[in-house]
Amino acid sequence: MDAVEVFNSLPDARLEQDLLACLAAPAWGAKIMAQRPYERRADVLAVAGAATQALSWPEVLTALAAHPRIGERAGGASKESAWSRREQSTAAASADEVTKAALIEANRAYEERFGHVFLIFASGRTQEEILAAARERLGNDEAAEREVVVHELQAIALLRLERVLDAL
Image 1: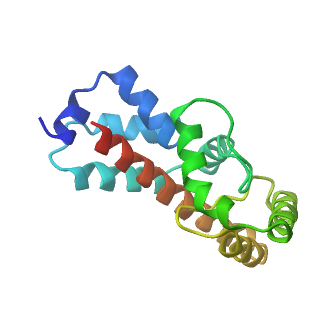
Image 2: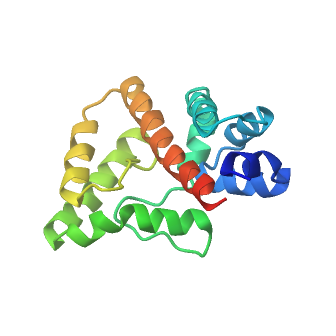
């Protein structure tokens, strides 16, 4: 049985838990579950991508609330926390104290400006790259930043969904 067949056959409660670890927006997971069965991996990812784009802003904010600040270590033993630590590990290893302090300040300024955590697809990025992106995004207006946030959320969710499929 391949990963997509296993994905299709998972009990709803188990799949819902895995999907919430990918993206803490119940509507997102519900849309993916409602489309089962899937024929191919690409179909699962396409539905997940479209479901991310269809989230309302309150649903996006719910998902954002599950993410730690960039540069802060996610606590807990959940799958989502472990993934967050892994995704930020390259960036954490690359930062000096000045950059870390600047990122803390950028996080604070971002949250003050937009009212939610700064979210970025951190996998493979250095803290210097993340800091530059945070500073650049502080210049966005609300509408432009919401588009960026949804894009970043989608990238993270799809990476995590790939991990779920790889583990099946």
